[in-house]
Amino acid sequence: MTRGIDHAIPVCAVHELQDGEAVRIPREQAGTADDIAVFNDNGEYFALNDTCTHARASLSEGWVEDGQVECPLHSGAFCLRTGEALGLPAVTDTVAHRVDVQGGTVWLLPDESQLTDGTG
Ligand code: FES
Image (cartoon, rainbow, N blue to C red; front, top):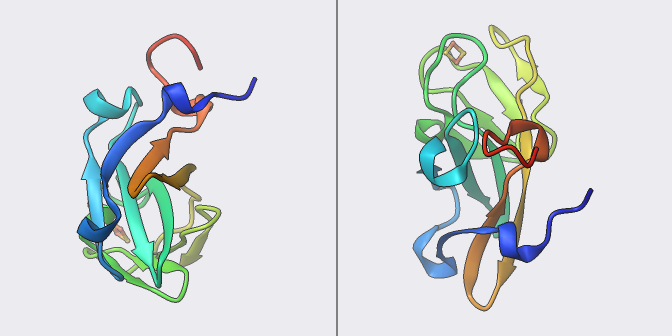
């Protein structure tokens, strides 16, 4: 089932999330099992589960570059587009979420598999 824009969560205004930056959306706000990190990489927006699959660091505090985020704790890397683990010691993929930009606002559309509100 496809979720409509009515299930989207406003993240911030476009100008508030600069290239190379990330913002963390708390799980209570996202309605998901994990917090979600939303990234701006060279003007493209991406979202992943925030907790690193290696040892629970916050990926929103990592380094964003060339389509990847590098974990701030042990430098594991994940693909921003797919959540694939790309660099040791991270070996377990994380979850990618949809991001949309409409009306000058960045919107998060959490993946249904991660919802805790009974609609997933
Ligand atoms: Fe992220 Fe170790 S906590 S690589």
